[in-house]
Length: 261
Image (cartoon, rainbow, N blue to C red; front, side, top):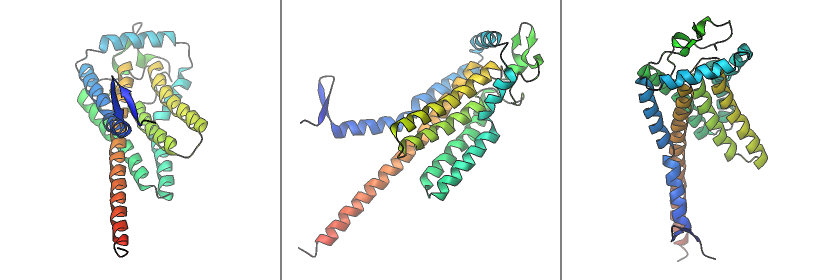
C-alpha cells in the first residue's frame, strides 16, 4: 500500500502533506488579519457608511416590535464583567491542573481582546450608531428605554468590543474542547454552543442598533487573526519541545548502548 496522495497529477508523500498542514496552521491567521486591516481602512475612510446605515436601518425597522430590552441583555454575554469572570474561572481551573501553556494561551487571547480592540477603536475613531444613525427622522438614542445595549456611547464603534471578546474566548474554548478526551458528539454540541454564543452577541448588538454590520465583521476577523496567531505560536513551541525530547531520547539511547559495545 503506497503512502502518498495524488495532487494535480503528482504524488505527495505523507510527510510532505504533514508539513503542508502544519505550515497552513501556522499562517491561517494571516488572511484574517489582512482582511481586518483592509476593512478598518474602508471604515475609517467612511466608505462603508452608506451600506452599513442602509443595512442597519432595514434590520432595525424589521425588528422594531421585538423585545429589545431582552435582546440587549443577550449582548451582555460579551460584556467585560461576563468575559472577565469566565476567563478568571477557566484560568483558575487550568492553573489547578498545572496546564501552564493553556493558561498562557488564554491570558494572551484575552489580553489581545483588550489591547488590540482599544488600539483599533482609537485608530478608526468611528462614532457609534447611537450618535449618528437616523431611523425615520429620530435618532437611535431617542428610542424607548432599553433599546440600546449597555455600551458607552462615547466608545469607538469599530470593532465591537463585545463581539471581539466573545470571539477570542470562544476560539480558545474550541481549542481546549477538541484537544480534550471527550466524545465526538460532546465536542460537536460544545462547538455549536460556543459558536451560537458568538452569533447571539453579534446579532443582538445589530438588532438593538448598538453597532454597524462592519463593526461585527471586523471583530470576528480580528478575533480569529489574533487567536489563530497565538495557536500557531503554541503549536510551534510544542513542536520544538517534541523535537527536543526526541533528540534527548536519541542521545540517551546512544549513551546507554555504548557500554555494551
